[in-house]
Length: 416
View 1: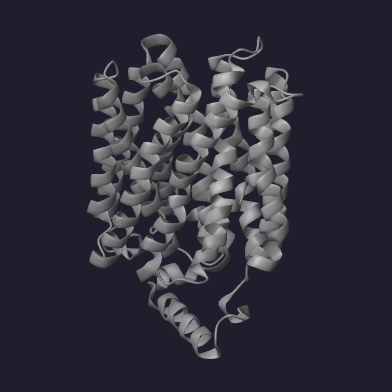
View 2 (view 1 turned 45 degrees about the vertical axis):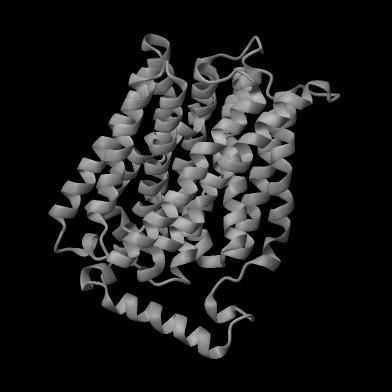
């Protein structure tokens, strides 16, 4: 878990540090809000086309080798973003970054199903996904510090140093992954034979306990034919609009409402992510302990909607805006982490590998749409409209989640 946690911190940091880089890149003659929005979102187009094959490869050859390829390649591309000198080069590198990283997150979600039974999965996924929050807790001050201190560094501009410095750790960690990960419990030298048997028996019991319709869905074609899986894609789409709305635009919201000092922007941005790290772990543990999913996910989504709407209404008041960002960010991460208890209950085998990747790939198109619409709303109506849009998407996701659980209350969709 520490290895996966550290890897996802780096993955998320390299994915969204463009939000901080924007504070320096806006001085470039070729850069604008529209270029930023398109470049931020085009990352997820690469995801769309390469997530499913990447996850199937991981399922077949194991996490150690495939995760190494992913981390090293995305670290290299992330560093190369420092050499962007036009909208075209910026778009191309962001697209390539999505291609390089494709399969990492759903691959880890799949990998966790090899180790942890469903009764532990919400808390385990929540603990793993606190990496998103920690990427903000530590990455935001680091990004702000680089932008403020690199003014005097030679050879490159501060935003270029940002990409170079934050891309290198991914390359280094990726090179060590073959010695840090174990593909399956049966291969773990640090487990006794008794411990290996306990894990494998628990997982086999869970598989046998799935409804027969779920057990039969073990191939790629089964995943693509599953209407419930496509419903999961739609749910995750609404949730990722909220996640990336706040991830990409939080630095600018803070700069516009609280402080223009880049170092302080980073420190203020760490506060909502800290709240989210605490809240999402409690959320996952409480959901596992009670065995309840429907109310947990919907109420968290609606709480996020109310928080972002409140922030939109009080955008001229620094303290209420910061409070709304804290509550809204916490709600978003609770929803996104809690969501992943659902798809793994639907399918088995290759269908699970393909299904998790499909949900992440299609759902993350919300990450493409979110910055584009946010930029348009900001240009036409101001930042408050962008925040309201993020909140509305979360509210819709909460409603869809509620209706879906009611519709499928007697099916595998509800058996998490």
